[in-house]
Length: 345
Image 1 (cartoon, one colour):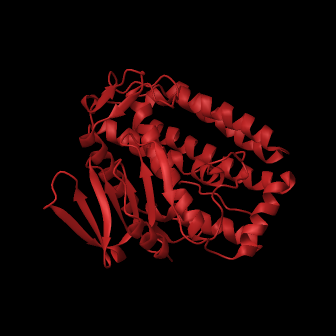
Image 2 (cartoon, rainbow, N blue to C red):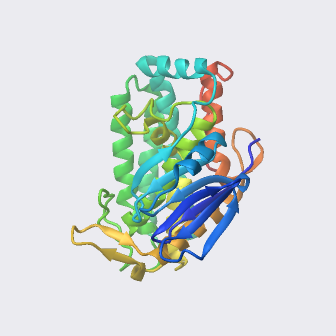
């Protein structure tokens, strides 16, 4: 089993990354004498939230050593990922492309992703009813849970991805329609009316979008690690520059890895509304201190262990994208009759 490695997050402005032997050098432009050196072999991924970038030598070293290198804007919008030679058996990717072209086959995999997502959304609501019955509207949450329960029954009968996306849209509308009920603290600063993005128009949506970007990047990295193409999906349609399969994979993981973490950060007051600012365009961005707090919580969350529902082994949350990517690859190779989605218990 793959080990959960370290991820280096670069958030300090005007920071440039370079290579010196087997070490990454982190240097701030205005302070030439101060720099930090870290051995590359300790890193699994590097995520940059700065504009200065990295040297070609470092990019090449990361690609050669299979270290993910991702560039985001300071606000968390995805810019680019550096990848090296294509890894994995070419026959696996050919099978992936073949299945993606045949709707009768691809819809079965897409349905599994969606079953995982809606089931995990239900679990989030059920947990809130169980743990906070005195603080939430139990009737509305129960109604939403029952709606998604009926949706789960209808999904296996779908014959097209259009049908699946219709059910996905309905379930998402119901889920986010009661999401504000799950915010138990700081409701004035973190109210939630509806899901919005590009740009996010309130603090909660800004937080969710930032975390979804992190999960998308890690899902794409996991898929590449097992030899799959993150840009050829089964549920999301192919578009230039869109990591469709990474978006497919993260659907079932979003409620568990992102939504629950976002709610915890707010309800435990680990972040506050003071860490968010509205731009002239209306979009909401988080400040550097809040971003660091969120990244720290994200890394700590990934270290928590859970018994994987399919493997029946105890694994850290951070390995779940990789495990699901591995299971998908095994299904496409013919080792598994179907793709087993991640069902959170």
